[in-house]
Length: 78
Image 1: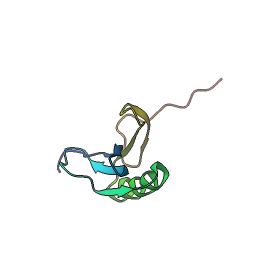
Image 2: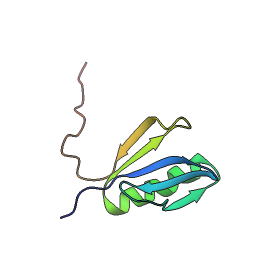
Image 3: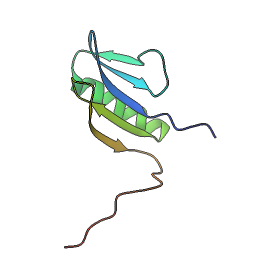
């Protein structure tokens, strides 16, 4: 099986884009970040990988896993 290639939502000159890790071009371009997140979420679910959301400054602001996470978060009991 190939290397996991996460889906990233990144700033783009025409708004926001979804881009697979390691790809040279955007997979899709959207006017709003919300539209790009929705498309990226669909892609990540379909290929069972992670969605990584970047802010306007390019820094990662959130991520969601839609695959078989080898290190899932542990529930904390209070």
